[in-house]
Image (cartoon, rainbow, N blue to C red; front, side):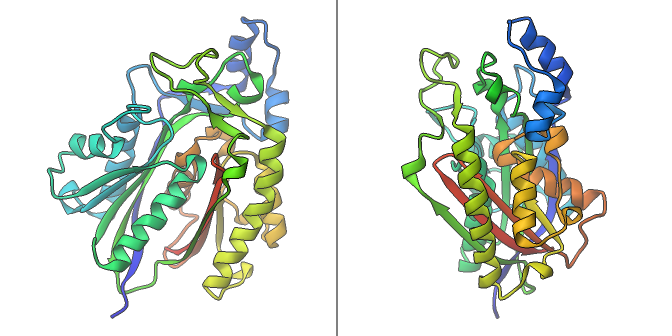
Length: 329
């Protein structure tokens, strides 16, 4: 019998603190940095984002999202035999243990499950879900918890208006299980290290990131935009070809929620109407590895995504990494 992997539960969590563009603009104005709601929204489509409290870590957000995904799946932590956490802002940056091991402990899972982190920045969830798919299809694992969790507010330079207005915090999770029915239909991953400098944190944030230690996020926005619109179309076509499907077979497109212009460009190139694209960037900002599972969970819970729907998820991130997954819910 052919073994497939299928998403059977989704969950998400946003920190309670919602920061609107107007509120952020006021905070920046106090530092002599000019911006506005119109300036931010017209360039990115972002109206607000959520920030974690100082005591909240990536694992805390991840656990909340995981519990919601487990509940939807009808599973308990004891049913999980692998935990994969995608994060660029782990509990211990540049050190260990992995955030996945901390999540395992906080969920009370004992020692029966494997646990590890994946670092592919904004492509992290696609990389992690593809990894779970491979482990399940190999027969090594049966039920995998995949989480994207970020506290990007910790690595933002609030004196750089070109980056600090774009990112937010949050977590999203899915439970993936071995199934006799097709679930994940195709997945493709890529990277090109020659572009490693266009989106990076170039220092170790020991004691907290500063401009001096290079611990803040740096992004060449124009270079990222140009590369993203190219590779997202290519990898989407690649997974559709692998699944022997056409863009018209896609019920919902869930791109990485980075910039509404990139997202609309991808949909247009695939010939998909904007109405079939899930958009959360307006309220979440760019939550990196958490953005796709956050958007997926919201669309599942509000009834847009239904059982049997074909979902195309794709992301790009620092590294430079990119990838896509075609899944049947």
